Length: 446
Ligand SMILES: Cc1cc2nc3c(=O)[nH]c(=O)nc-3n(C[C@H](O)[C@H](O)[C@H](O)COP(=O)(O)OP(=O)(O)OC[C@H]3O[C@@H](n4cnc5c(N)ncnc54)[C@H](O)[C@@H]3O)c2cc1C
Image (tube, rainbow, N blue to C red):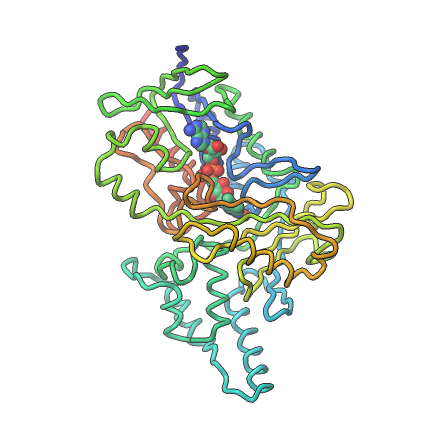
């Protein structure tokens, strides 16, 4: 077996792993990142298909952590394309609503529609209770009791039974927090750090992670097609990682291991026997992976937001599709000439149970036909990725507010990535923030 020596081995080249790797490389540590796939970036990457540059997972880059990382690394974020306009489709009508006033404005529209409909049908109004909800909303924003375990839906039921209002809150929860409103505790909901501006990379996310990899490669290495098979633990410390590279097993000796493959897979690589029961129990009860269907729809003519090159659409009252991003309007360079592309990730009926993929797909197709009437004549489903809770590719490795600590019972083994999101963060910002945190800890230790 060949031997290598590095200060730190990072397992997985997702956004969290590469954040930690690039920051620690810049501090002078000799790093190797090992990646099992033939491409870096994990759920924040790009693959080519029929001339389209398609995302492997994330598409929207919220302003903040990711952009700051690029600036810190001297990569710059100038070429990212901003999405500044958010449109809501409510009862078939489209409304442009600035992200900063999203919730009250949506409720106000629902209120007006409800009154109009009740008057037309001569039925009693199902009150929206806008004022009461907003009073309760702002009160919770000022301070939340972390012990509060009622769900978002139950909290909202104190104020209203209007179905459209409940649907609006569910759309918010599934779109941004990884769980349904009847699953997520209200205490977690109000931790959420608002996102008001998003970006898309016109060169695909792979180009971003490649820039991060270049920072690492100045003093270290990034190996693709190199799955880690084992983390060796001796006397309570990680001493080396066994990696398969070019058909051979190699041993990388190191002072520190950072794993970006999710807390559960880290335990499997290092051996359950090296973790105390408290840690394993926490992992079992805390981590809540979130499933979704990533659906990429190509067409010969635009299917939504025609002529708008900086907007996305949020659909209320759908079966599954909540957010629609017309990628080709914003970044036409990602699609072949004359083609259009929309991106949507659809949340299944439950985020707690494995998806019935066939059934979920039928629901998504019904949504597509209903909301994009031109689909039948001009569109086709280009790619679908089932991101389940039992495979290693969920939309998020855990819901908002349910991150594991970065530290493990093994003093020089850390996790990074979206299984370790800080309270209030989710997705790419959550992964990047965990990379900053772990780099800080490691710097102090080594
Ligand atoms: C469909 C979908 C849509 C999403 N949309 C958004 C969005 O719009 N905005 C947003 O902010 N977030 C979004 N997310 C979430 C976001 O993509 C993730 O939170 C983030 O990319 C996770 O990064 P990570 O650091 O946890 O690493 P991961 O992406 O999980 O990467 C881990 C890497 O480790 C590798 N690996 C696994 N096992 C091994 C091994 N044994 N040895 C070596 N390598 C290994 C994997 O191949 C992978 O490359 C979306 C996710 C999905 C799936």
